[in-house]
Length: 181
Image 1: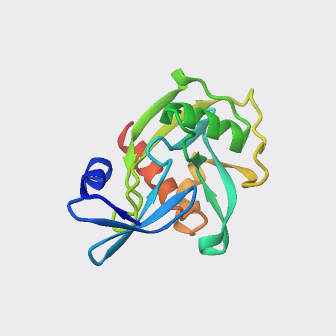
Image 2: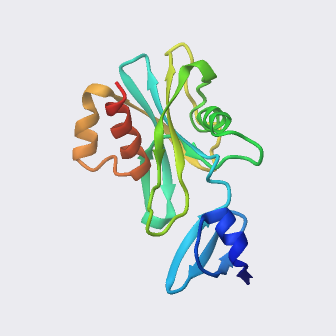
């Protein structure tokens, strides 16, 4: 399938003819000249959320990732639903993946990340959310998340330096958080 130049320019700001090489409900593989890249259909309103519990711990999730054939410890994140804002997505994803409820007023945008600008067209908003120990987290989306992982802030550098946390979204969220204090 070939997209007309005007449609590609409107959606992606692309200069040349774009061919759709493959497409499914989550993403499309596009080809422009000799370059291939991926467009994720619902990523523009997706969200990444760094959850801080009681000001002394981070709330992560453990999730099996087929691309790296490993369970990863990472921040809650996900695609937005049609018509949903990235803020609404952040609130929903945290609830689904951790069981914690966050309110809009406890959510602060830290920035955005283009996770792999060589291959992905996506740019995802990153938020910080505060939760209290009054709410106890539990995985609601058992098809995706196997466990909620609480990491004391004082132990975070050891988790990262020992490669227990290597996810790019998670490391980006932590870096943005450290710059927004």
